[in-house]
Length: 199
Image 1 (spheres, rainbow, N blue to C red):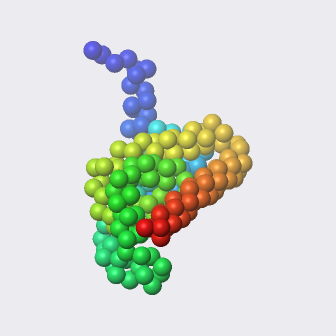
Image 2: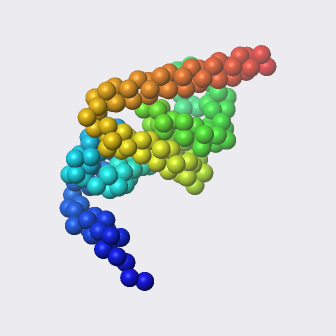
Image 3: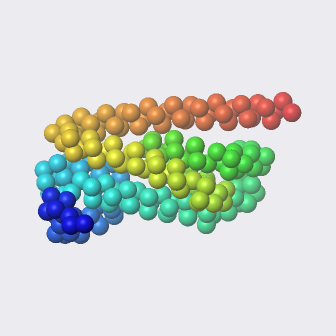
């Protein structure tokens, strides 16, 4: 089957683009994700970058940072927390229960945390500390990454002229989501503590 020039054009266009802006983008996203992604999406709306490669580069940068945070937690020792956590008010049975909860619900925790700005890093570190195998959560992390980065790229591409308003809106949405998740986490911990005290 011979491909027509219409089908070859996007492939040839991608191959003719320099790769270094996308490598730089992946690096910048790994350091500061949303702002770099939105800026690159705006650049793609003006024709300077390809939006498909912006999405791919931003996703790779975010996932690289996520794996780094998980590895940092994995390199740590939960025994340190169980031994010295009492000084910080963390009881050994609470730490072990949290470890069990992370093992049981790691996919849900990471999916929700990925869609907020501030919770994904501690969740990934906790998953590493709990030694949760990456095979149990990487699929949901990919799905959440696609939703998050795809939304940012689409927003920047189609609404680049309103980018400051979008960025402010995204920050507020993320802050509200983080507060809601934090409230649920506090309720969960308080219930666990009262349940433990009643026993």
